[in-house]
Length: 134
Image (cartoon, rainbow, N blue to C red; front, side, top):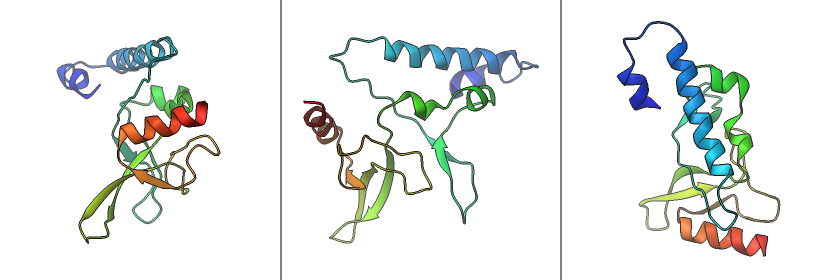
């Protein structure tokens, strides 16, 4: 979205935002129409729509059309946020947040992930989901 937005930055009017939203929506719909035996993984940046003291993180989108008409996270069963925590060795450790703590839109079905944070490892995540769905 950002590349097309920058390519069209000099265009005046709102049509470019409508076009961007429509193209993003078509990507989401295409993912929903894939075969059932495929895992569709979408990675996005997050944005804080709250404050530094009261963060509210969500998937970053361009323009208001997507945010006002569609909750992108609502189209997914699983939404993970990456967090950097301090590892046992004192070094940064990347993890996925599996459930919302009130500041993110992270979610997963009840019982799929018992922990609020799991290793940032897509193979592990897909194995857990497959086991949950078995």
